[in-house]
Image 1 (cartoon, rainbow over the protein chains, first blue to last red):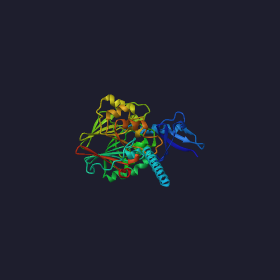
Image 2: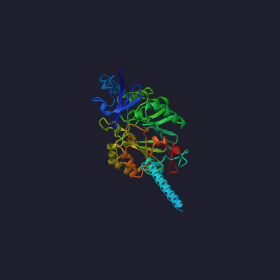
Image 3: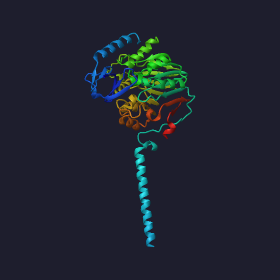
Image 4: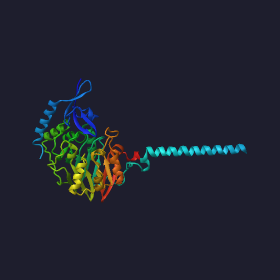
Length: 74
Length: 312
């Protein structure tokens, strides 16, 4: 079964991933992240343990957040 | 006679061995636990050093493991800077309730990483909130989205402060040292951290979020007054922050490092600890001391730590 995470941040050589509910997190060495993985990306881990980026989900969340931020900040 | 002489020699040998063993044990203890002897890089967690319970200005560095959460209260007004990861929301709420906090007059999300803003959505939902300060930078994460949803649902707005802007918390003065509204630090969200100088009765506290050395140098170039009594060490004691020049200029009496025990990042880094030692800064760590509280009363600073009594 594949698992999905959000890459919250890079921290001193590690990638910090959070589960969908934002409460559970785990830390993996940065080099295990796929090329082009940026903070805020949706990361999928397949059965073999390998990580990949879900670009569609990443972009959808980015656009949604950008819209929500529009009239929230002054 | 000969027998007695032999006995004396064996007693002497036994004494020599005992002295040797004791010396070796003492060396081991000194090497392993320098904090017991005031040496090494440790500062023993202080127990209540002054009566700060009735101080009208208090700063609580609330232990949320590997994350930041700071409550500043002055004359009945409260400012909360970050709240740690979302799993610590309950702990933060309990702490705030114990302190009698009903309204958070100023809520600061220093920068949108989950170890700082994770629990803020929950806090926004559960407390009366005044002004919300956050840098205008988005993070495409669930924790950030949860927070802006909670703010939006309450009909609140977020103010992104500008360098030099001032706020009041009761009779304490707050100055924004970073970032400027048009700051651009590429993808390094740490550097967007809201850095605050808070002054009360001529005592100064500096809160730096996760701002790294580039921002520290920028603040130095700005020529801002950063001489402080207490510094929240940037970025959990990582060597990315607490640069030599910055610590020399701030020259605090105390630095508070907010971090979790056995964190995978090696915080606090040896370079940071060495810099504090070089400038004779008393470094207090939340992983060792638990929550750390400073109070200012009659122009004096008192400090108390949750685990103070146990650490001696």
